[in-house]
Length: 86
Length: 212
View 1 (tube, rainbow over the protein chains, first blue to last red):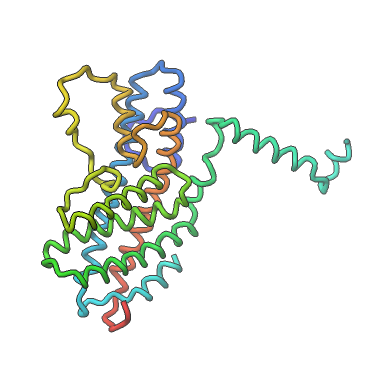
View 2: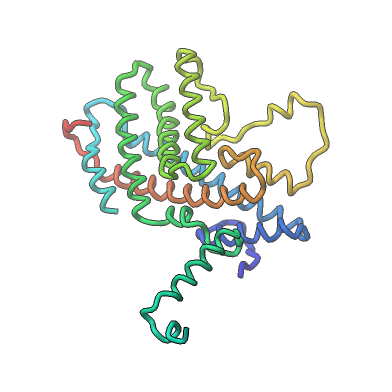
């Protein structure tokens, strides 16, 4: 089912699910401690990565929204319309 | 009873299935599919909902910034934090109070807001950690306490994880893993939504005197 991955980056969301399932199994048996710590570390790193990405995206959006003066007026109605289209 | 098996319109079998499924989730089988609340983070409608609410919140942030009178350079730096906090708040709202991490984000914002109002623009250093989703809590407890025996590596990593997921420092291990699963799924959606919004903002802004 969940094979031991060689690299430590989580690419898909299914991998996250598999990792957590693996972690649950590992934690219940308490046999393979090194693997447990490795999986825990991967999950932690993944969360940190996601949080950092959110932070970076916030900075980008901040720059794109621009200073709140009238010269760079973002048309929010337009943005909302495009968001709904997806 | 034979007719139940051969007759496809007879829904006794369906009832049996439903009952088995319900029983399965009630006994919390770890091999079962993730909870429906976690699955919903992957749906497009959920992302669209979130994006809409976030854009409205961004509009609000922008309006609030234009009325304040702090210098522009400080404003820009502070504003990205406002945007990130708004993004997290909207994410927590979308969770509809079903998870611990989402409730923690909302209550910590409330308490820090009340403190802010009481202190009259005190300082920008945040008090408790749940609001600063992006920052790691540095070990001030480590400095004040004398050197103690380190925990085994597994326990240490579990502690790190519990600090990363908001509001989960003292929850049991199985609950922590459940919260982690949901939190990660929500974060992935947040990244997808904000990326899309960034793309839209890169292409779409129009110089109109439209009401912002």
